[in-house]
Structure formats: C-alpha cells, structure tokens
Length: 433
Image (tube, rainbow, N blue to C red; front, side):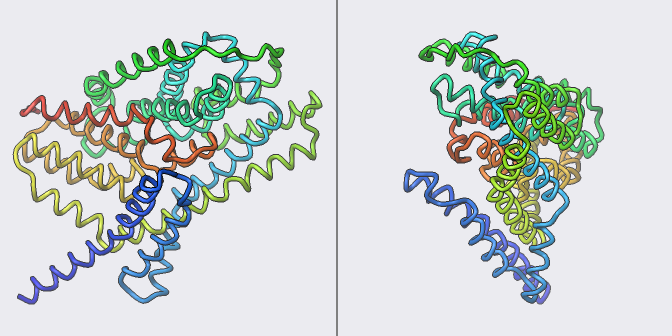
C-alpha cells in the first residue's frame, strides 16, 4: 500500500513537471492565435515565464533546481547552437552590408525563370541537406537568399523560408551522415542503406506533392519585373563559397567562419565595405542574435527540468503500456518519438531516448526494424520541423526577419512526411521481419 502511494506521488510529480511546456504552448501559440498577431507575445517572455514555472514545480531545494536549470541551459548541444547563431548572425549581417545577398539573389533570378524559383529553393535545400546531413547548415546557407528572392518577387519571406526549411528536412531525414539517420539505425541495429530504401518508400509521396505544389505556385504567381542592375559577380563569392563548402560536407562553423573572412576580403578589395564598417557589421550581426540565444538557453533549461523530474519518462511509460497489435505498436513508437521531440526540441536526442524501447516493442510484435528506424527518423523530423521553438525554425525566422509562427503555416513538407508515416502504418497492418 505504501509502495503504491509512493508510485502515485512520483507519477503526480512527473505529470506536474510537464505543466511548463503545456503552459508555453498554450500561452505562446494559443495566445498569439487568439490575438491574431504572432508578434504580440515575444517568445523570450513566454519561455521566461515557463522557465520560472518549471523551477517552481521541480523537486529539491531552490539552489539545486536553479543549478539543474543552468546545466540544461549550458548543455553542450545548446552551446553548439549558440556558436552557430553567433557566426550565422555575423555572416548574414556583414554579407548583407556588402551586398552579397542582393548580388546572389540577382544572379539566381537571372539564371532562373521566376516560375522555377520555388522549385529551385526546395530542391537546392534538399540537395544541400542530403550532402551535408544537417538541416541547420542548410537553413543558415540558403534562408538569406530565400528572403532576398521573396523581396524581389513580392512574396512573403516566411513563404520562401518555409521551402528552405522543408527541403532541409529532406536531407536530415535521408542523409547517410545525418545524426538522426545514425541514431535511428544504430538503435535498431540496421544498415543505413536498408533504412534509406525503406525511408524512400515512405516519403516519396510527400516529395512528389511538394514538387507539384512548387511548380503550380510558380506558374500561378504574378510575374514581377526584376531590377536590371548589373550583376556584381565578385559579391557572390562569399555565398558561393558557403554553399560550396557546405555541399562538400565541411563543418558548419568552419563554413560560416570562411564566409565571414571572405566577406571582409571582398569588401576591402572592392571598396564596398571598408574595414571599420565591416567590423561594425559583424558586431551588429552578433548582437542581433541575442534574443535567439536567450530563447535557446531558456528552452534548454526548462526542458532539462522536465526531463530530470520525470515528465518525459512518464510519457514513455504511459504510451508503451498501451501497445495493442502491430499497427498499434507502430503508432505508439511514432507517438513516443514525437512527444519526446516536443519535450527535448532535438530530434536526435528524441530518437536516442526512445530507441531502446522502440526496439523492444518491435521485437515483441515482429515489426521490421528497418521500418521502425524509418518511422523514428521521419516522425522526429516531422515534429522538429514544426516546432516554433526548435533551433531550425528559430534561426530561419531570424534570418528571414519574421516570426516562427509566420513560417509555420507554410511548412507543408514536414507535415506531409508525418502524414506519410501515418498512411504507411494504417495501410499495412502486418509487417514481417
């Protein structure tokens, strides 16, 4: 009896630890939708209140709770994102000051008919992300170009940024060097090539629908006259280098550092950006990422408290007990990784967190492990792609100078691959090993 009471109390505390996340989603998403203005509630304020709530409902003395929160905010993955934010801000602002973005946009529109711009952005993001295996690097490299193209053709920057984000998750989901692919195949004990083939069978309808959508959108769009200003090819060099190095597979931090240095060199050689103006633009780019860094650290601290207080464990235990049949088992696996992703805001961590349980469930019900690996990877990419507080969405919104919730309604590809997973699960009730 005493043991049952202690289990009930532990479950109650674990459920209570989820309230900050629920509060954030209701306050930020619900409040913004209710007011019809996604800029009314700053995300940093919503996360600050939620973080205070997370500290308040956590167990232990106050100093211990704050230390735990600080450990989450200073997690190595969070800090890695902070360095990328800093470098991305410095490169984007200095390259914009130089005129590299405008030059790259002008060259893009000169090379392509306007009706093909939408397809080109999506396919380029898909190709780059497949080559480098990271959605973040792809978004950093291509979002400023997407925003510049949007301004030239009179479309919302959020719309074209969403095409880049969607394409970025194509590679994040399929690339052999993607963290999510490695995590999914390692936890399920399958070969990457086998998982790749299974994954393609699941998501090809989403890719086809996106390509048709982009083509139709390009044909139906009102054609605008693009400026006939001369093309300054030399100004394209920083962005060409960044995209080229990214495709080769160089680390994103090195790629951005090279871009920053090249911007300074080109600015000095062309007299377009004198040294002191260049230094000022780098500084402004770094400081402009301040809100993004604060949000990332607040989110990291809050989510760490949720994890430490058993919120994520409660979700996993509750869902894993409800497995019924092979179809139900696949749905539970998909739900587990999706909810873990919401609680961690990191699709790789989500896969690692539920990978062992997913393998146990698949072995119990005789589900093909290649299929489980694909479900884990695809579901996590779907959820991560739709999280307004995910690192990819935050950096895309910052570089496109809009709100994450402005981008969210246009994120068709992440939503489509989620629907493909559900369709695949419901279409096949039994899947033999």
